[in-house]
Image 1 (cartoon, rainbow, N blue to C red):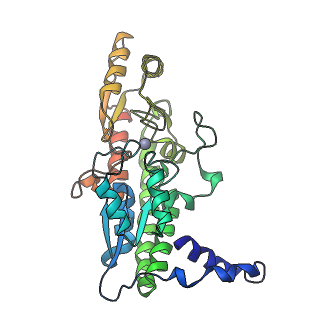
Image 2: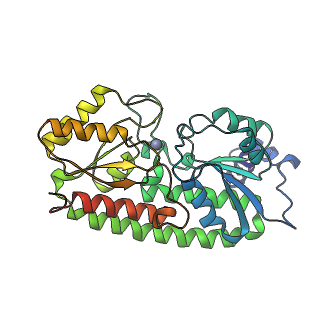
Image 3: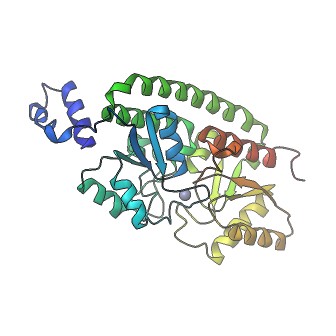
Length: 320
Ligand SMILES: [Zn+2]
């Protein structure tokens, strides 16, 4: 339904080129009646939920399926989750198979006529990282580059305005303020990572969530488990990462809030066996935010926390 409305909107612009499009905006594309209630949105991850809260403000009720520390690669929707989605005006998820076990549920919602939005679809393919292991697939962790997350914010703004046009200008104003905050955070990250010696600009973590972060801010990234946590790290992965850390004398590695620390601890032991001590530099929030009122409980707080954690562990003089 939403998709049809978006297509219809595009067709207005290109009316002369695509004459057939005007039929799409039919009676079935009526939005919800919001005269006596707020727009109801179900979001999958805490990161997506934060974005919808930021843009929707007081005009949307956001229900998050996943809480802090939940791994979206492994999350399965319960019967109750499916009911929550079926009662929503809009379901917003990341997409690019981040929610790897939920593809059937999203398809079911579309069949039932519940509008769905995959925010990652707002990012053009040429800006996406292609997966080495899964050919034809892209790395889904787009939010860890603040400039890419701006595109997701734009998609959310348009989707909310489409269903609740009476508050379109409020969504636009909140979106604009968020984009400004993202710009200044982006500048902050670029500035503080300069404190890390080029040879130590490497983020070694549990899984490859930080590829976009690394591309944007100049880090090499080594995830023990690849871009999904669905595949367990093997002994060979542990040895490969331990070689890298010991050879380059990287001062610290990081654990992630949504992934067991066991793999990184095994690497630490393997590095020790090579005669080098590597620190655990702290917890990064890759796929899930911290608890709502914690400093890393918002998107902006999370990116700042991750950056400050990385810089204080890897900058000259840290650790050793
Ligand atoms: Zn991930």
